[in-house]
Length: 184
Image (cartoon, rainbow, N blue to C red; front, side, top):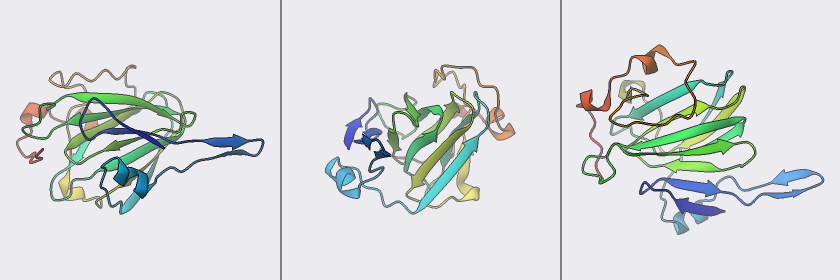
């Protein structure tokens, strides 16, 4: 697989080699060996799978507080999404900067997002399935979110969101979060 660091240090685009023939295709979706060669250290402990029925469903921008923060490796196994990572590590030269990539069932790519980043995505098609690995377990008491359209961050979601949870609609802007304790 090809692993390329994005404009944000620590966020990587993973492009698997897909081998196809008349039967279909095969690929490695994760390789600890290849991740370690690229300098990525993550001991994944949980796999998650989400389904979004409608185009324009926005999920994010989410985080988990320390010591429950999570690195994630996310891929879209059905449909297409715009996946977004935002650096919220105090002292980072990229603080509040974001990167986005399109992940789809056609390009087979994944995005690795380290701890200390917000994460969110918007569905660009109907009937989207997303699968992701995390290196820490989900902890409800540590979950949080930043307003998806916070002008301080300025994410370009490419399309107007149609469906958001109340939690995401009512999240506070980044400047109002005093509980974030992520370090570079």
